[in-house]
Length: 442
Image (cartoon, rainbow, N blue to C red; front, side, top):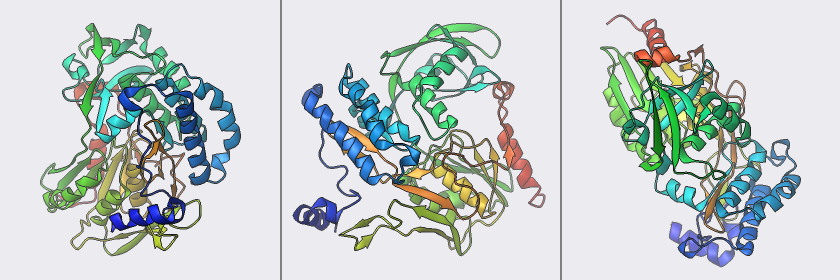
């Protein structure tokens, strides 16, 4: 079927057959051969592509209140005269960042290659500001940070010789405009791990205070690590289940049934979406179907035209505007608590916010990212980069819009450094307490 569609698109014309560029956005626009720098013509083509595509297809025809013509003019000269290609692509990203939208972004060819290969250039280090200090929240397995002996709960004293809190604030102040301050913090974490095109370096110097009070200095070298989302489940005791999802990767749909089989005897269930940056809306709905009975409306999609995206000159709609759940044949109907934090974004927010809105789950943790718009895949940009542009917004069945605000937890639990040092998970403890009040003793 898709081969026939591509032939039809070629014969009739892309605009009529595929007006939203659903099938054609990943075609053409390769990077220069052998990594050659873009010439002036190549830069102009990339700039024109990004500006025009956002102008014609962005979900909000008012561009979130931004004068898009003025934004293009404001950034154009700086973009086209950037000192190197990495700064050129960063400049394009800065232009689309004027929309204040985490989902609308530009990737350089290097970033795009990592994304397609599901890899990251990283230190494997997750930091957060707790009570004015920069604290290690987690360390990725086999990462430079782990190999250096950095552990959860460690305090970061300096970053590249600057006081850590000062470095953190400086990066936050210059971070791209975004959906929320929590989304801007995600940008700070990306610069920490992946580096800054304005100050390119493969290494980062850190002075670390261990959990026993001693300290050490280390130089970490950024490396390429695989990004692999997982969906796992276990029984925490005889009557409470726990599901952990690190990202809404479509391929994980095959794990849904085995995961729910693992917790089918549980009388209450925790779904942990902390740190989950989102992904497939379809996977989120499939998981939610396991938690409801029958047909349950959860909201609607919002598009620029007010109609679903289409193919074949509007004859083939892609989905419906209404978003509904259709319960599984044997759903889990016990009480549910969803755990979130400030890094829970997009699909995580749809999942948590929707279940909260229909009174199917309580939410524990911290206010989520506030990054709930949608796009239908990256578009290849001339010169080898990529553009994501928001094409869908979401209106919940009840309650406020999530984009720009986030999901507000029913019970707020913020970790402390002492919790991390002692290995305590206060949010999980609170979630289990809530469930135990709703299920009979084992």
